[in-house]
Image (cartoon, rainbow, N blue to C red):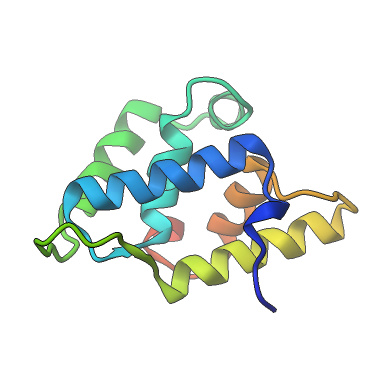
Length: 126
């Protein structure tokens, strides 16, 4: 299944864009699910932070772990735009399946977070 970015809500689009910026700023050649998790954690409004608080996540510790893990990714110079990794595409496709299962027309940040928790990646392990 080819993932369509136009099926993302505004907040989900912002999270994916933030993930791309995080990867680009770090010089990472690919956008990984961990970049997406960092993008979701960076959002100040929306449902991700309250949801994580509700389930008892220590967000400062999670932020620290994500930042440390991002530091292990390969770096390149040259300013090329990072490309989505295969794992990120799997997360986006899983998020679309979550939205379909819930009979939602668009993929939201909640669907992205659920997909991150299900698709095997460093983000899931964190």
